[in-house]
Image (cartoon, rainbow over all chains, first blue to last red; front, side):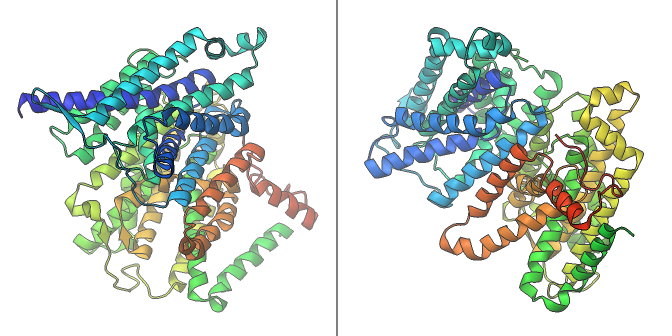
Length: 289
Length: 333
């Protein structure tokens, strides 16, 4: 194995890791505020991909330009799911919170199947085949753009949570639910907004992924699981941890192809997951619990 | 004999006689009803009674199916014995998953994710093992005979699957009435309190997962010799793990008859959908309905539909149901 190949894999890993990070930031945000693990997270991302695909095919608008609109649609989806289902299960035992969200994922997945059929669809966008060479290392332009936008959106979410009133309310509810109630924050509405924001993050990630891989209804599980691994790696509820965890997992999966067939790279991620859960359940960077 | 027992006996007699009047196609639907009721019951042993949610139960189904088929194809071992080998293997794997989960204090969502991780790793690894058919899966030859567990027509399968379901019912009733069952429910309601009272919760958690895995694997052997095709994605995949938990949830988690009722409600829907909707391009429709039904049940009747059936039956038969503790009345939150 020569060095430039390794460098190539590491860079590719970092680029996909940025998107993993964005997906996981959404999951971690939802967990941080409500203590709920969104088992429909990957399916929401797939919805983002399909909305982006629809806008591209029907209106001819490039996925990068429709990003905000896609995020807005998935925000509304998340808001609706929170208001109709999740707000009712917040007091359930932790294990029983899993089942309704698994069912939500099932509904989303099969709605996609119903609307778009089982085929893999991949739109040919303007940039999808362009590449850039940096020395001996080749990078797909769309991967680079997706990475940059993913980091940008993640930073924007951090700034939103730090600076805006709604963001501060979300953090308050996340730090201390009872305290937030006491100072007059409408926690139900904040929950809706937080779930919506988490969904929007994963929806945006879906839009960024659309030029990179074909979309099909059943790919949601894989991304739900990837997001779990990243969030557990970085510490549940730790947003910065989710971003860094995404990068680590991206590099781990990509370099795993040096000694394993690419179709087995997830075995590496699941093994990392099990080891982390056994020996460092709070994650590498500490979680909130 | 109470009126309820009489009713059950009448129901049993009717179901035993059904093959005399029903055609092959409708019998096939009943086979699937009994099959999923059995699998749901097996999952119910772990999740319904101890409260630890497994979202990777396809793992044990797959182990049973692959082990039985492998032993039959390479060593000529009859599935009637092979399925118990598969069951034992599944129990060992279940004990390993349980050991990691229960010994290292993985509770709630962590345990759920652990079970998924093991099923997914197995799916990916089996997809790369040539001897197990790798990505293409395994096709079984059709050589009908009692020894091969393969038959022409659905009538033998009907009685076998019916027997499976009844056996699981008897097994779970036995568990429910035993110390094991009471300790399992104690764990579900409050594991720490049970531990404080001196219950060795680790041991009973391990027993529950081993029994559950063993039972699920036997169903895998049936599946292999009824469907004749095994693919790693359908045998170990998460979609199957989700599919198999919906019926007990809708029927009533942690109850004796919940998984059976759930299967009678949901399974025909999927068979009808396969026959009619798919041709009209509506192939995901039944799963959407399943999902919505499961959400509604968890939100508004977390003890399952069985509670309402029991109540209706009590009213109908003018009994108070006091003669059947545990049957459908299992507290569940």
